[in-house]
Amino acid sequence: MELPIEQDGMHYEGMCIRPPSEAYSILLPVTLGCSLNKCTFCGTYKDKRFTIKDDKIILSDILFASKVMRRQDKAFLMDGDALVIPQKRLMWILDRVREHLPWVKRVGAYANAKSLRMKTPEELLALRENGLGILYYGVETGDDELRKKIHKGTSARDCIEMGRKAKQAGFRLSVTVLLGIAGRKRSLEHARATGRLLSEMDPDFVGALTVMLIPGTPLYDEHRSGEFDLPDEAELMRELREMILHTDLTRGLFYSNHASNYLPVKARLPRGKQEALDLIDRALNGQVALRPEWMRAL
Ligand code: SF4
Image (tube, rainbow, N blue to C red; front, side, top):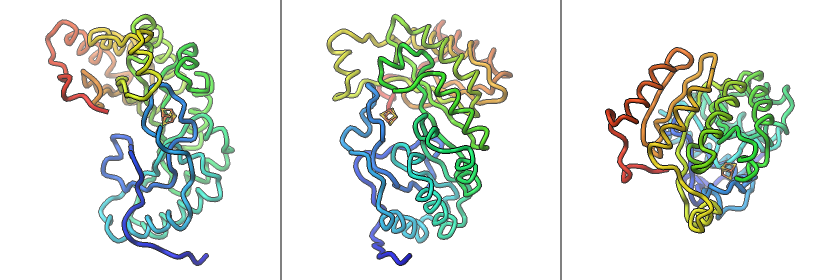
């Protein structure tokens, strides 16, 4: 297919995010926004209407990257859930990455239950064999009552089934969970239910983030009206402790080193569980310094 090419830089639009582990990857904007865009705590894509970018724009960005990003051996497909792109087009994108960025060893993308459900096991396998190696899945919580409240749109069971489907296709699976999202009252229920979800899903990586209140989101308004009470530092640490206590992974890495957290923890489970719990206990006793508020960020 002959396509007109503009090579004037990458076509980034608005706020662009990527997982911390993709900080040095080639960031390829293949979609705009998130196809769900309803979670009450999330303001990332509020100003974007979900679209899949035009093929010629995607190819232009890949060609631009092929000229100036020759040292980056990973690529990440932005924005929200690139896995939602229809199979033929997504395979085409991966083909172009292989063709023009042959030094890229792994491609990553965000995924969710909807996009994983749309793909057959055979399609997922074909994507993995074509270079898509890791999926990042924001599950946030295993508490179904809370999932409804924050408009995640799917159940904990959906997450478990879709996570397993991704793993069966051979993907590395990285899952994020959200500390503080239950507020004060349901904090420990959220922690236990999330630990159970993670244990059943058994991802390779779990990243715990702490909820931050973003103006313009429904959660921010709930907080302002007194409906949502953000747990304090000690409560958040107890929540993290309870979550780790209830998480049994075969060989996964649980970490809370994201800038939004007060206490960075990194534990290879199950081996490192006790050490992580001890560290949190020391922090709760004031023996470990927490990240100061001014250094916290999303
Ligand atoms: S949290 Fe994820 S799924 Fe929810 S609106 Fe934000 S980007 Fe979309």
